[in-house]
Image (cartoon, rainbow, N blue to C red; front, side, top):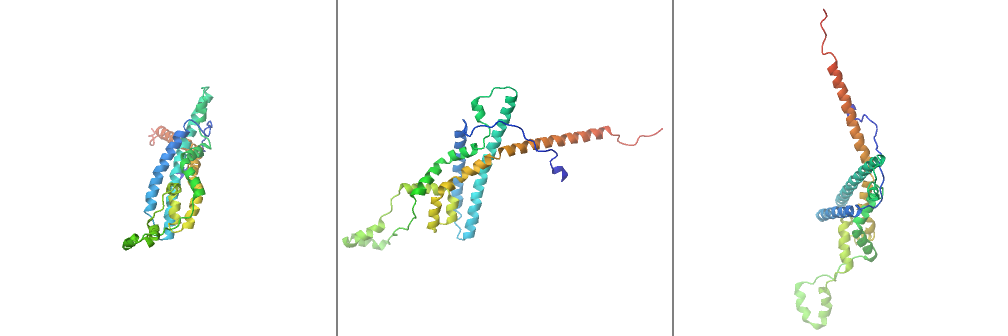
Length: 266
């Protein structure tokens, strides 16, 4: 157990801080958008296949799905945050050596707001759709229904054809309906959590969808903030391994120098 404990103190190297937005922000935001699209597609498929009748089971499964989505985006943000801190360490070393650093290079390293900016820009399309839907959404009502085939003969009678014709008319697809599809795919675990029959709760989900749509960006930004801690772990691990290697070499050297057995006395 003692060998598994660290033999050195936590090692932290200085680094230069960058700006919240740099020349790579748009590219990273597009990567975030691509990852988000893939995750949403997989989430949509999984949620549509998990329409459990049991409320507890449905809640447990959808909470697990949403948790996994947030964990993936958190890990992606932490990965970029670690890389940006490493860039800041390199630039700090260059600055100490007197190497000239351009303004573009100074913006690239870690900044605590950069992860949130990337996530916000990458998910801006969904957030805008959610904001519009939140102000235009209304509780969905069931339609008049579909008449059985044997009523077709009555459609020729002028005195009742007008009334029966109302049942054959479908509601036109509106702009709000298109937005509803986009936003519901974005927040599918929460929609599945509410259930298709609870129209009041579905309306509430659509009203708070702008906040729900910001969760991926928040998870990515929080993960990005872990960059300095990740770099400290890496440096500490390297220093610990070097310390253990030195100790082993000293022990091996002592064993080579020490006599291997009792010497014969004359």
